[in-house]
Image (cartoon, one colour):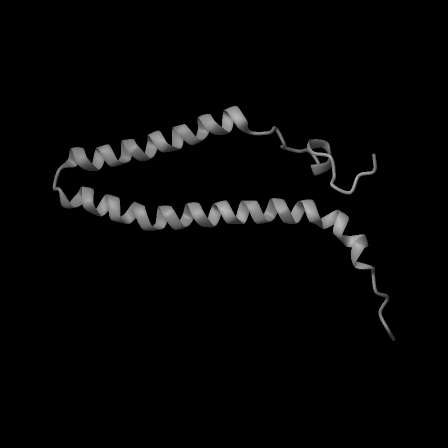
Length: 97
């Protein structure tokens, strides 16, 4: 029995914004994980190698300041999107005028 084929253009309007959002999340997650995975062990290894507890403490302070800076940036620029559909946040690309 042959399967019914759904035209591709019927699916694009529904998945295109979600694909962009998923790609952006994946890209920034990968870049952040890559940077953190390379710099973090090297930095803390260098701080531990100094033999000073204060150097390690300074490294933890640096990490906490970076997280606080990220929280402040998120508080200023984030869109309140919790429990809302994508259409309520941004107009769909395929929406008719």
